[in-house]
Image (tube, rainbow, N blue to C red; front, side):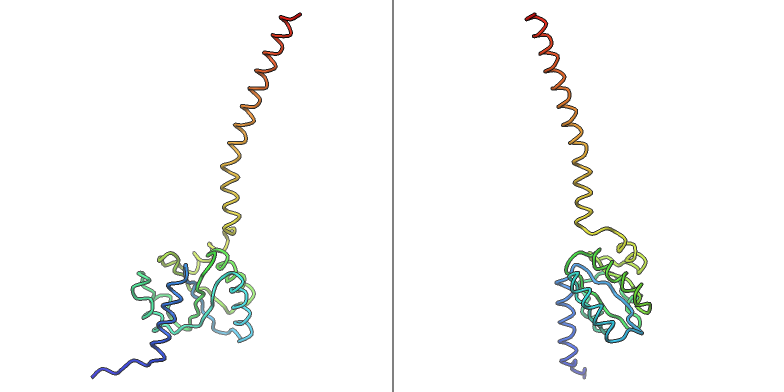
Length: 175
């Protein structure tokens, strides 16, 4: 006869599943050596970047991720694990965690699941080096706008020269 699952653990799996379904991705960290004060500080920083930081049990996370995350999480879900569930900009959250790893030397990034794909800790650090989404959009718009502005300036110059030429011919004929 199979034992009934613990209702508290079932509720925790449901909670993790809800966080996964609401988030754009998850960044996993090893929080060993952090004090409660440091974890609280990290949670505050991540909330400012639209992310929730929770300590998760590996087995419960595996159960919750079934059917949501297709990649094998065995390499990441080893040892003490905390997960940052990303609700906003992924690069901003990765940067906040990267900054925290420099400040709190014991914190380390294990990896991430972004867009349903598994990334290593090094790849998350590379993501943290990207500028924020707004800056990237501004750079793309600026890159598109620059040739158009140059074209408009060139066309304006051609029209101006044409008008001056026509005016010069009219002045010559009238004289």
